[in-house]
Amino acid sequence: MSFEGTWEIVINAPVGKQTATAEFSVAGDALKGTLSASQGAMEVEGTVDGDHARFKGKSKIPFPMTLEYDVALDETGDSFSGKCKSGPFGTFPMTGTRR
Image (tube, rainbow, N blue to C red; front, side, top):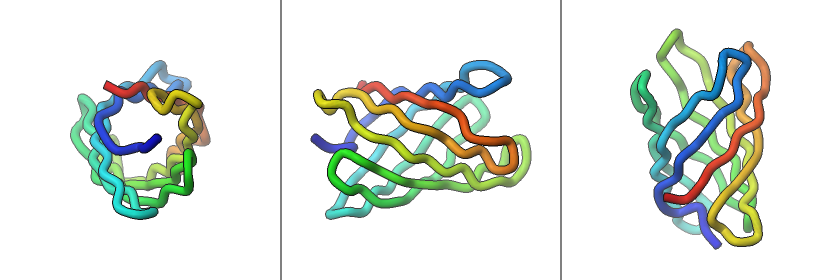
């Protein structure tokens, strides 16, 4: 199981579901990638430990803030769930499905 690949992400924010597409690459315990949404794209990087990943990136829209993600793969490796900390706005549940 690996986070490597393309994922459809849904963040359940108070303003409604926010969707994005993620492209992740993994080398050893390092994760790098891009999250693309209607508001634009954001580079992310972090770490992988087995079926668990933590990564973050800096968003510029609607204003600059750091988004932090903490997710775990399910037993099939084709989906993950976890949380997204959205700067000062709180932490929200999220899911990802392998494309």
